[in-house]
Length: 419
Ligand code: IPM
Ligand code: MN
Image (cartoon, rainbow, N blue to C red; front, side):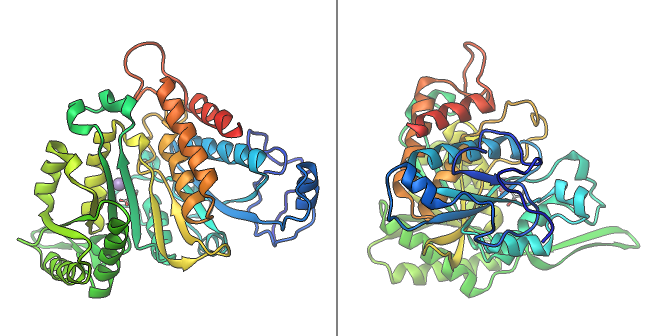
């Protein structure tokens, strides 16, 4: 073990999160449960008069990453602090370096031992990776390898990306209000297969010039599990699935489509349509309210969700959950939760990033991985209230007045959550 922080550690960070029963640990080493120096639950529970309640603490890995990642993650952590104060939970946070900052510190975008540390937690909160400093196309080590490696190593094959519209923000979309009002889509993106991971993937030189290859490969079981999940989710929603592929060109899409037909046959309660990805790119702009669950392969899902963020008004608003089959100590699904926006180097460090996508990702974490429904709803309601008051970052603030900062928005949400 390299280093332990405790209540009296002079190196402990100052910040909104570091208060009361809620403790943000900045140690880089692994902290065994029950290590000395931790605030005992019994003390807390007697403070709030809850003697006899069994201590439940939640362990979350925090991978804030690059660019605006640390700024928006800091706001989610602030909201966790407010939740801790209001509901008496203890959240133990494990900081882990990922992306460019990990390359600078260790020479790799995510160390194998840090993947293992993340695996031992109940859920992972992730900011963003990447930036111009590490963008050299000839570099062997790239920030994105950290994120892709984490998804793959943890078996997070399903990336859930809800696309909803706050009523007050229909005017923020570049699309007309009547097109975006009431949209409630769940994009289910396959996350550990397809062209992101297929081999070979390389570049070489031939006499006539350079050549590069990437491989789009899918195995039946990978296709089946993601489409099945989409059908299960649709059954709990409005019962409609759009399966998106490029079956008129790609063999992998023809496999996808035939598996989708088999899954549909076993789910008479859900209706499915097949939509070609190019057509879907158009339909999302023309009539997005027509769709409920959209399921698609890795790269199509990446592209379509950036496009779909314009329905919501800003890419800074959309959260995501990456899930696999494993469960955590609390019986919830283990997952990685991150906003869909990237590291936005152009606005990094300026307090301009919208923290709402990150804070809504935290709400997904609370509900899906920790089973904290009430707390998740409290966060979502707080976000909705802050949106309604119009105290918003520049990406959605409209033209009147000066926009709120990242921490203005985070503090406003945290204050409402604190009750
Ligand atoms: C995303 C991002 C990542 C992806 C990048 C950073 C590797 O764009 O999560 O959508 O392409 O999956
Ligand atoms: Mn993306």
